[in-house]
Image (tube, rainbow, N blue to C red; front, side, top):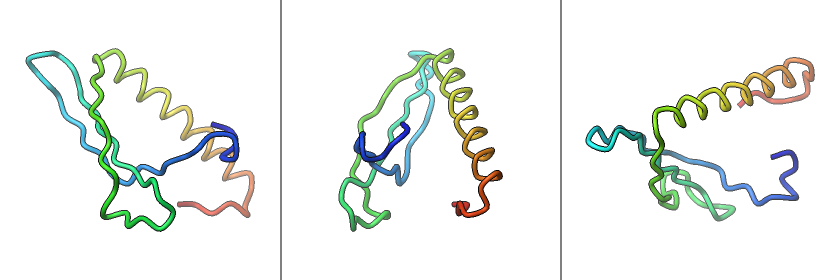
Length: 83
């Protein structure tokens, strides 16, 4: 995502992650905020998604790449707040 005005963004407030050993997958359930003044302690419950070990590794790599890019940008622009 490059511009919040183009794509609706729903902040993730919490999540559940765990293995389903009998199926060889990892489940991921993001709980999110879908209203402006929604209490983060009472997020909207998300759906459970199943991923293979290979998909989990790719997701980790993609998240790390995005985080590295964000941290690089923030380090070059001192007006950006760290969250």
